Image (cartoon, rainbow, N blue to C red; front, side):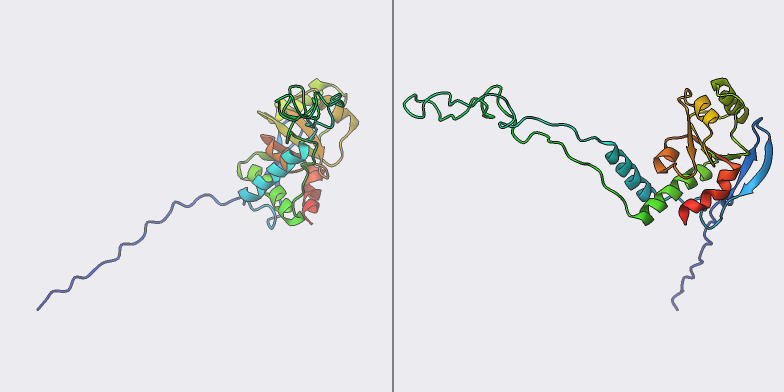
Length: 228
């Protein structure tokens, strides 16, 4: 009687469970002391990043920056050349009607660049996904923190530099506030690694170009309005 082989299924190895994503960020005061944990909207800030949407957003913003001013002169734009250089027949040379022909030296350019508009726009829903993904990327990398308020007594660079040193920020930092005060704008404009934006004005490229995203406490409460 033939023996039948019995196969024993091996249990699948369980994947190492990663730490659960937290949508809360620490909020500091101007001296760098942690005051509280702020809970972001869990329906929006999930840590998921749509790389395809981010790519399209970057291409769009870079294309919209192009001026499109490059221009070459065609035979109609080059000055001179009104007179026929020599008679039509009898010289043994090719026929020529103008010295500004593209075939001649100092003539016009064939198929050269002309002024054009590179601007285009993305669908609103896709733009929203890209903007949300940029913030989620900072949130997932623990590069997003809160601050109670961004205020300086005097419009001096050292006053804003003290905030950077207190928060121990390294690299480029984007400060998102409820409203940009005049003193804050003047104190930060000499710092190349700092950008200050209102919560209504910053976009996907602003977030991607920074290493740290710092949002004031009033702006955190209004941040969800950008996605409604």
